[in-house]
Image 1 (cartoon, helix red, strand yellow):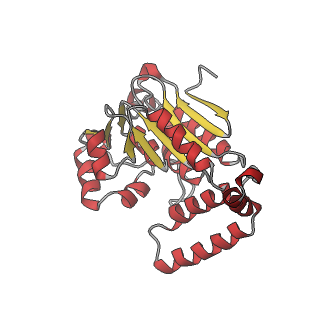
Image 2: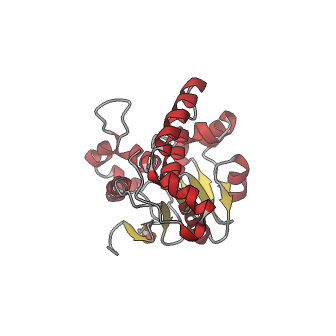
Image 3: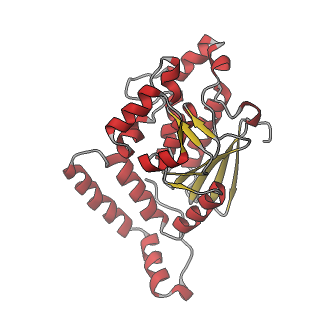
Length: 268
C-alpha cells in the first residue's frame, strides 16, 4: 500500500521491504515499529523466499526515532519497551532482531542518514551495503540514553569493544568509509540497491537449506563455547544432507543441463 509506512513486494522469491516515510526522513514512529514487526514475522513464514532486501524512499535510510511522535504519547512509548520476561525482545528490539530470525539472507541497502534506530534496524541484517554519502551514528547517547533496540547483539560480533564503546559513548556521526574500516558495514557501492539485488541473486543460486543452516549456525552460536559450535555444525550438516535440496545442489554442479530448481527450504 503506497500510504503504508513500510511497503513490500516479492519478485523471483526476493522480497523488497521499503521504509516509506520520506517526508520524515523515515524516522521511526509507533506505526512504523508495528509494521516492521509484522512484515518481518510474515516473511519468516515464507518457505519459498530466497532473500530479503531492506531499503528506503527519500533522502535517508532512517534518521532515527521520531522523538516528538513517540514521546507525545506515554502509553505508546511504554509499548515499545514492554516485555513479559527480561530475556525476551520487546517491540523496539524486534525491529532489529527479527531480521536475524528469517532463514534467508537479509541485505540492508543504505543511503543518506542511518542514525540511531535506523542503525539498529540495519544491524539486524546479514549484510549492509551503503553508498559513499551514507552516514552512521549510534545516536542514543545524544539524548542521554543507551542503544536498546537489539543492535548490541551485532555490535559485539562485528566491532572491537573499544570501537563499540567509542561510537556509543560519543554518538559521533561517521562516514561510510569509516564505517567500512570499523566493520560496521559490509561494502560501499554507489548503487546499493542494485548491489543488494546482485548479492541476493548470487546467494539464491545456492541451496536454500544450506544457506538457512549457515545463517542459524552463525547467528545462534557465534559467541558460544567451541563445543557448542562444533556440535551444532555437525547436527545442521546431517539435517542438510537428509534434504532433497543438497542432492539438487550436487546435480547442478555435475550436470547443470539436467538440474532442477530448488525446492522450498526446510524449517529452521
